[in-house]
Amino acid sequence: MPTGLLDRLARGPVLGDGGYLLELEKRGYVQAGPFTPEVSLTHPDALTQLHREFLQAGAEVLQTLTFYASEDKLATVGLAGKVDDMNRAAVEIARKVASEGDALVAGNLCLTWAYEPDDQTAADHVRRLFDRQLEVQMEAGIDFVIGETFTWLGEALIATERAKKAGLPVITTIAFEKEPRSYEGDSASDCARKLSDAGADVVGVNCLRNPDNSLPLMAEMRSAIAGYLACQPVAYRTPPDKPDFTSLPEFPLGLDPLQLPRDEMGEFAIKANEMGVNYIGSCCGSVAAHVKAMAKAIGKLPAEERQWRTDDKPMSAYEYYGRDQL
Image (tube, rainbow, N blue to C red):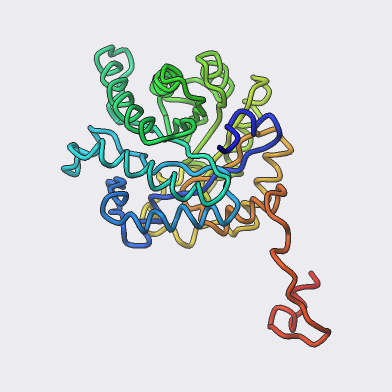
């Protein structure tokens, strides 16, 4: 049995995986706009392959593709009746690939678009949505839960509550749009403290913002709490006045020119590690090449996969132009 999340974090940084829905849309398996994750049912081999790419790149955790796999969201595309099947299939696919290495499987909860502040009925409805997903995910075999992309701190607190009630370790992360505050007005420091106090084992920031716009928020969180931190930024370049990549006119179909080169994600991993971030992952726009660069940067993969040079005569353009000497 793989070592659990908390034991791994106690030994050093844990490397997460990358983005799923946008990459699967580029490959023709997900519809842009709703970005619902029925690919686990319609094209399971495509999801299996992407998980495998992240595992091969050095990821120590595979997240189940259950983002937007809650009843209300799936109902917008006529799939409300597939909630259980979709969550179960997503876990089973991730578990199968994780068993090919030493990776953990993280169940995934995300914003539901059903949360309303100061509305107890809405809050209880969100609890039911999360509980339904968690029940199926736990039956199928997850190791811990990642709650992500919450712009309402209140909804993030509910996700934390439900995951902890289920008896699982939980990472809960907040997504900040243009302003570095939750919708309630909480700063990154406030969010870290409140989520930690609510029982989250790891707290942090994910999605919407790239490394340059995420790391300053991580510094605030590190100054606020002593516990474990997580950071999973997107791999897109954004202008200073629009740090949220989904606010750009290029979203979602024109993002390709904005994708960060792999070395920038490697540099992010180094900076995050030096800052004391414990769970270092990535989100939308991050593909296996980015994860591989991150893995090499923090020592999860060797700099060279295998020896291949044979003599002093160049045997590839890589050698011919002296790239191997850089």
